[in-house]
Image 1 (cartoon, one colour):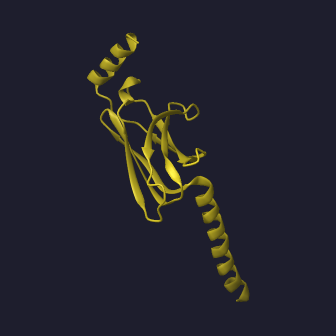
Image 2 (cartoon, helix red, strand yellow):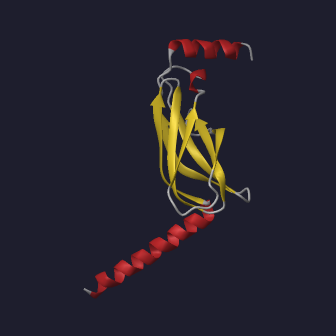
Image 3 (cartoon, rainbow, N blue to C red):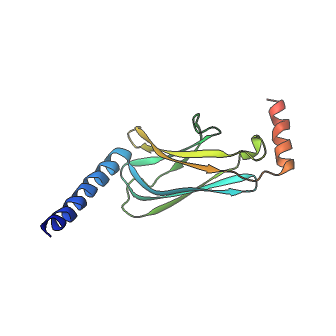
Length: 143
């Protein structure tokens, strides 16, 4: 019986140490990150549990889960201990092939310029209208 009562406070202490180190290192604690497919767009949604000296979030996209490119930036609140919800829409998905899966991830950028990649990758396959796909192909010819 003594071992159970000892393990419980010990596990809480370890959890608090890990959580505080994540907050200090990353600048933000992201509690969920998801992508919702739409017609000719992908909507990304995420929430933070806390933010410490957080400048914002770089949104990155890849077609192969390896070569990520920055596609946008969402400004953060800076410092917060309350849950904050964020939304970003990627409206440039029509520029690629129909039925393509896109992979997204977030990079947390701190006020001092340091950054950390939030390791969760979200895969989303939006529906792309034929007219939008054709227009994207025509535009690509003249670049």
